[in-house]
Length: 99
Image (cartoon, rainbow, N blue to C red; front, side, top):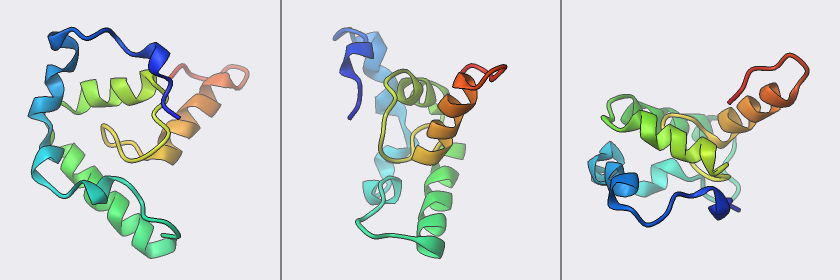
């Protein structure tokens, strides 16, 4: 579950970046895996989502949001659930880098 205690308050400038997301013009299902999706189908969907993120003008704030809230689901800012989990695991390892 997303850790909402990490979210900023209801101040417009904290959230307006979402209005500029490239994801707003595509089907949101490419960012979230369906039940039992595995293998090639999962990788293809993730690559499609990442390609949308790659051309997104708000990729950085989106990624910051996902990392700050430890968003558990979907592709955010070009990072999959596994990508984000790996960043946090690396950061918690001795000598690891911060997320």
